Amino acid sequence: MSSGHPHKQTSHAAASSTVGAQLPDNLRRLDRLANLGLVSASVAHEIKNGLVAVNTFMEVLLEKGEDKELTTMVRRELKRIDALATQMLRFSAAKPPVRTTVRVHELLDHSLRLLEHQMTDRMITLKRIYKATPDALSGDESQLQQAFMNLLLNAAEAIGSNGELTIKTETATDGHSGRRLKIHIQDTGAGIAPENLPRLFEPFFTTKKNGTGLGLSICQRVAQEHAGAIEVKSDPSHGTTFIISLAAEL
Image (cartoon, rainbow, N blue to C red; front, top):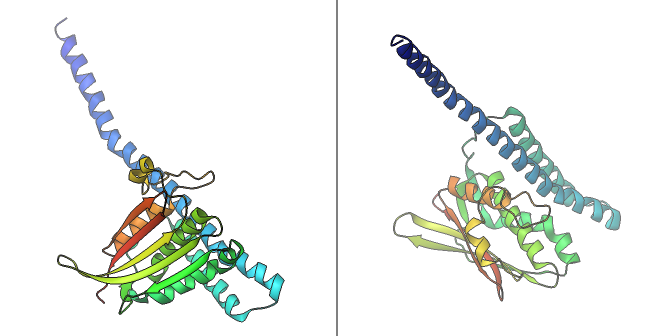
């Protein structure tokens, strides 16, 4: 009888060892599936943002006839969408930023141009306060545009109509990380509930009926990949301000 117990113990130990070996593999598969879902949802979110330009082009085309400048802009957006779709199909690990010299003011103006039609329809007043000198930094233009578009779209939605959208840039010196370029995107919407502020940058957290909950997490990732950060200040009586701080050294 005594000889049977060691055999059982050995069997249990072997089973436990097998389960223990399988667990990391299962966790890796679950993590891969989670990443696949995140990438797919992220791409869908960016396609939705990119289509803002297509919709604008079609509306203007119907109202005013052909517009060569807008046509060029739409082609640029479609190229960006195609690149995002390719990234999803390849399902590869996130690639580091492809850095070039980015003129932040030009990129902000381009992003605002994409939203011009809907802001006009909503009677949103736009204020540009560009104080950053110089406004150049080393970064990935496509990634930075993702972040700017997400924040600008959120601001326009928060305002609704008859409000004000303010874009301000400035340079600041940080003793630890050198010169910083800060972009403030401020709206006069209803503000963000205090209990939601700590969760704003969590993937898939959203208070919108049809939101994906990925826009702000994408913005945070882009800021971090450019040695920067993003913060939010919100007051129900004054609206919301998002501040992106990026390393400004070229």
